[in-house]
Image (cartoon, rainbow, N blue to C red):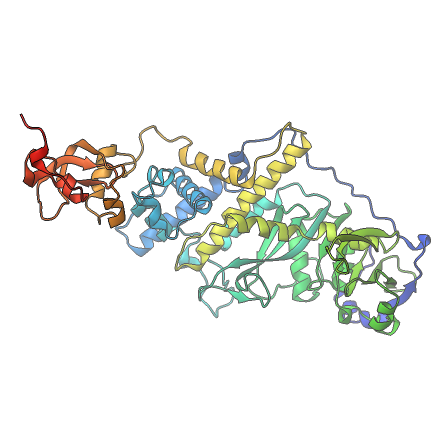
Length: 548
């Protein structure tokens, strides 16, 4: 158990921390605490839709339907959206399909030239756009006005995030977790967007996430304002309070390992987490390490020792304290500073580095402190989720900023389901290989669009008879001239429904249709009714044709 530290003592750590350099020997190593939880094991592999509905379930969908219907009535009392859970699932299934099969604009999916039956057969374009326009996640009348006490910049999306966080929190956690930032890409001008210089998506909504080393998300928090002090903890500034808020779902005194970068790493935070039985490793800025500067070796002296050299320091609050923090400085291509409350530099480990001195740039194996290997293998969980999100990200242009966050949450829920599916697949030692993310998402999309649906589909251009769909083509512009003039594959067919002949200046109403050009054309026995041949620039002589 850690020593009891009050808020006042945290402000005086600079004077109380005692540091000393640790000689690199076998005796200087510290044992890694044994994790006291069991690995998650379900015993069976579920279907993709079951994993997806673990997060976007009936409770979430019904809530969205209620708020969307309320919002539509608030806009116009005569406008009833009448959105139900089944229809909302179909709408989400179409959005998922659009993320897999990308077109420049949403309306192109209903274009008869594209014939996207996976969209056209399930919902009219006007209904899809109506649901998108009115989809909502909170009651605007209950929102606190800006500048008033209790104002929340993300009140429009906060209830949905809270619902999903409850689902994420229920996932059984693994031993190694990390905290890092996500960016939801958004280049609009509304909402609590931020700019992060050097980020792949510099403009967007900043999200802090708690994830394991495989990428499974357990908790998220949108960055909107300073994080207040957490109940049962002293105030350790906004960044430390944020970590405590995200890490509150981690079981206490079970020897979980938490990894973070130098944005969060601080001695007060590490000691406060150590009181909860949560051990930490993270890169750290030297100006955040209280009282260590007079003991530090200079950068030049460390580089003079050569590549892969390191020094280790140990600090504690009092001489008799058992809660110690170790700082390791390692010289790689540049000097890295890591701080930890468990483990140590010894015993040495190995890592792969590109050897730029070789002509073919082969990987070289170099020695490194053991906590460097621990950090590298367990820190990138949030980055893995970001890379998976980038493959098939849901996107639809909208003037409402919270739509972008909603699509991100649906994507993140689906990828969480896929990662849990892979975890169950590997734990049960199922034969074969797990399905890819593309197959998983396609399966979920198809199920949402088809499950519990009647055989009769909605009336749409792709659901009606072939000749009716082709008949609608004659009302649009003609195909390009090279297609008309190529004289390849132009076959006439007779349809049940008549159409206006498209050969200028003929205005006849005929049943004959060109299958390639998709236009109605006259086919007659006289010179003035040979529109099919004239339209396709076919030279002919009627006098040489056989006649009865």
